Image 1 (spheres, rainbow, N blue to C red):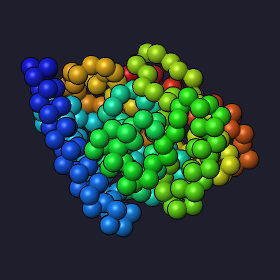
Image 2 (image 1 turned 120 degrees about the horizontal axis):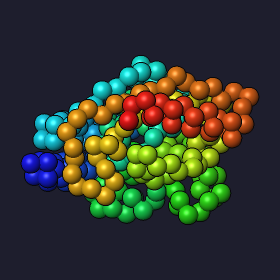
Image 3 (image 1 turned 30 degrees about the vertical axis):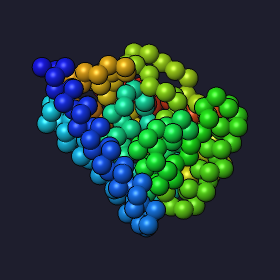
Length: 236
C-alpha cells in the first residue's frame, strides 16, 4: 500500500506542478511579485495536503514565529525533496531561493521558478558561485525578501554528514542580517532516490535567530551547523 499511495501522490505532484507552473509561466510576469510568490507557495500547500491524505505523511513545526517576513537568511537542513516544497508553503511569501541553475531548464518547473526570481548558481563554479550568492543575495535582501539556502548543497541521508558550504554564511557576514537555522527529519520518511513516502509525522524545528553582527563567516557557519546537527540528533 505504501508504494501504491506513493505512486498516486507522484501523479498528483506532476499534475499540480504542471497546472500551477503553467499559470505562473503564462500570466505570472503580468502579476505583482508578491502575487507570483503566493501562487508558488500554493503549490507547496496543495502538495502537503495530498501528501497527508494520500501517503499519511504529515508534519509538525516548532518555532515558526521566529521567522520574520523579510531581512533574514534561512539556512536549512537538506535531507529530501520534502523541504523544498514545505518551506515554500510555510515561510512568508517573498522568498529568494538559492538553487542549482540546472533546475531552471526543467520544463514547467523551471519556467515557473524564473517568475519568482531565485538565485540560480552553477554549483561546480566554486568561489564564483559563492560570489553570485553574495551579490544577488544582497540585492534580494534589499528588496525585503527572505534568502533561503541549503548549506549542504545537496540532499544528505539521515545519519550521514556533508560539509556545510560557506555561501550563506558569507552573505550573512556581508549583510549583517540574522540567520535562522532550520532542522528536520524529513529524510526518514521521504528518502533520497526512493519513490516511497512512509507514513508518519515529520518534525521541523526553527532555531532562534543567530546574529551575524561582528562575526566572521566561518564562525557563523560553525554556529549554524552545530545547532542544526545537534537538534537533528534529538528528532531523528
